[in-house]
Image (cartoon, rainbow, N blue to C red; front, side, top):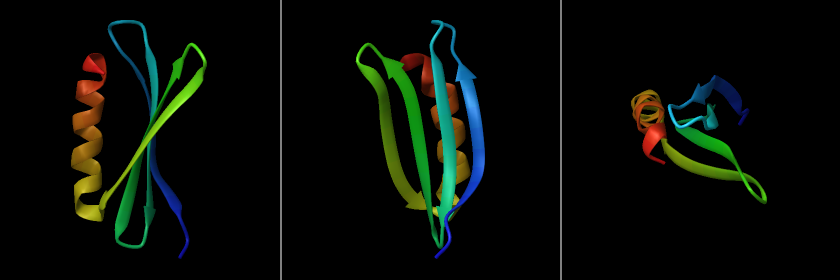
Length: 68
């Protein structure tokens, strides 16, 4: 199956941190990936969810980025 990027966003939070958030789709699964810089490099967190939960989860992560 082909993996395609559905959405990508750069989120700048109130505590002056930058997060790169993107969502890809492969079949019936969406992968939500959050990347942000740390002292030793870049931290990446990826979670797979069913496609109908991809967009709502992305919105929740965008709003919660200040608290990460």
